Picture: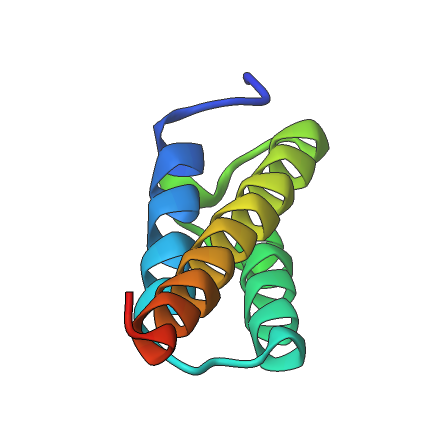
Length: 84
């Protein structure tokens, strides 16, 4: 098993889009993302069979994607409101 896989990119893009285009606050994001990773431990599907290292990398991708999307949403809003 590898720490970085195709699903990691999906995590990054998903949370980037969510943070960029929705007003989801940090705490609900964290609960959903952490809950999903915990749920994958008990799911009987092949995509959920991941190492602990991969789960840590996925959480990092989640945080990075959410942070980047949140940052762009905030900076785009401030640019529009300043009239530039």
